[in-house]
Figure 1 (spheres, each protein chain N blue to C red):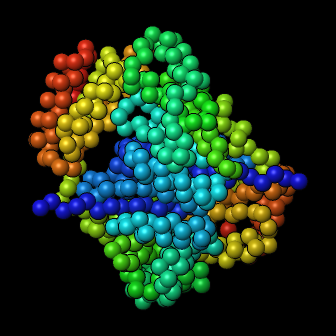
Figure 2 (cartoon, rainbow over the protein chains, first blue to last red; figure 1 turned 45 degrees about the vertical axis):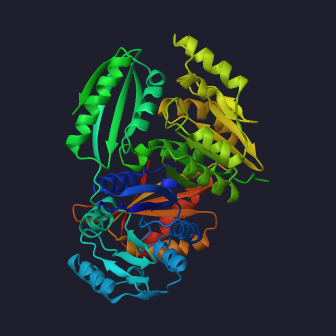
Length: 261
Length: 261
């Protein structure tokens, strides 16, 4: 019996994302890594450094029944790092000095020859019942905490820290046996609208296959990148299905099809 | 009397964003353009090509009282372009052939020497009461429709089309007199945690000023990019405030401060 994929929601926290100063590459990196491991990202929500906003999106995400929530950002020592406080309010679990986190924090400060200030000490306060995720790249520990069927993970916003902590400590939580396999075909000489009814038909016929077309114009000539993917087949099975799709398209429309490696 | 900034929520639609195949540069471009014009982006929500998901996020956004909702993606002729259908359900306004949109569509097809197929005709169906936004770069018209105090705008996902349509037909809706002014200071030789209490103090003292610190390590030495911005002051007033902030930091901490142009 194949395991159901984990439904994941990503919450990106930071004013810099809302004013367009920073492109949200953290979310797309996470989405790719989660998808690769057989998880299914359902929503990505970006909010600012406001406790009420962060709390509200976490509460909604839990009530929608997400299996895993991953937040990034807002774990540092500054005034506008409010993620732990918001999680504490969302789960109704008070912030307490977490011994595990405090040990990690002191260790990482010692490694860098830094002193423990009041602002830094704040980073060791986690919602009660939470586990600390070690941060070997930076200073702020992450958080892993359960609420009903949902596992909530809080990671820092600094990409190198977030990535290292996700790979080592979170990736196993989102994994399932239902890995995504994919192929890409380049179709030249026809427009998306001509292909659309055929794709609709193919998707109805081939259960469990997702076909997405990305139109592009090049030197006035139409080109379509056809992305075909599934979490229910092996790569070999998908290749066979794609060869059949190629035949069906060529039978009906005059075009050139190339497989993209 | 300064006008209140428009509260904007961006809804990005497309499976390719949720599987990490595409980085959401549309949202950050929009966020930057809206902020520049004095609008305030409160949330950015990314969902897949599912009618129920799209409908739900639109309904929630309206109930949160957003002044403007901008969706991108899902307006094309294919099977998985479901944005208009989802908006129709969210607003409870049936899809109807919109004469304005139909004229635009036929015109843009003629310009490109394309024929009107059933899939393409679908792009002229808009929720009742909506206005069509012309698309001179591509084919699918956009939508502008009001629901109570909220103005909902639907734009295509293709960046060149989306940008041209936003600048020409949407930017005026999100504009207000409250433009954002900003400065950046580079602070070398101290850690974010040492600066944090001082920033907290400064933000309490200087109402309407937002200070955001972005720490970076360079060759083992700490550097902080300090982003200072406000929508309540002129650039000249902000410069004066920043010079004062510079003095206060230098008085308390041993560091080097450079203004970034």
